Length: 184
Image 1 (cartoon, rainbow, N blue to C red):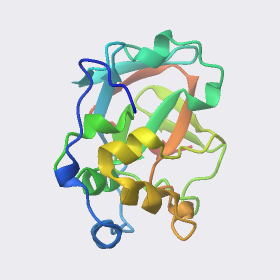
Image 2: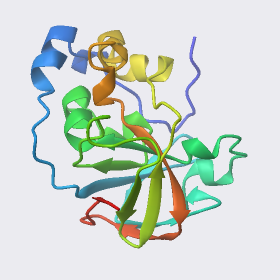
Image 3: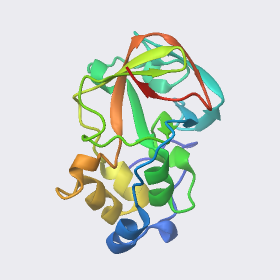
């Protein structure tokens, strides 16, 4: 049985979609603005807070996030990022903070659009796509349903990186809602 921190947002299984509903709902368009739509700080007590701006740091990742304080053995997992469109579809009305990702961006994170090692500019920061895969886990399945986990892990859709990517900070800088993610 999974333990929750007392202040951690709780999922509602009534919002879970079937695999067929998820496949129909997640239609990836060819146009993405690259706009940063949401920034989330995850706190030690399990609570999460949306912020308008934050500092991305080469050593500590997202300043204000619990991973900033953690002993990150894998620098490649510094910042968890997800497509806003995919997250909204999977959440199906639940709060996006449930995902546990730091940044939600209107962007195509699929391998055809974004390769490992690709550098990106967001606000004043320079980021790089990590080789670490950003896969769902038991928490993801509990929050959004086993079929959501199956969809994001499915061989047929793996190249779309529906669960998102990990980024690490190459050059520190401030980011804020509305900034545009650009390939360098």
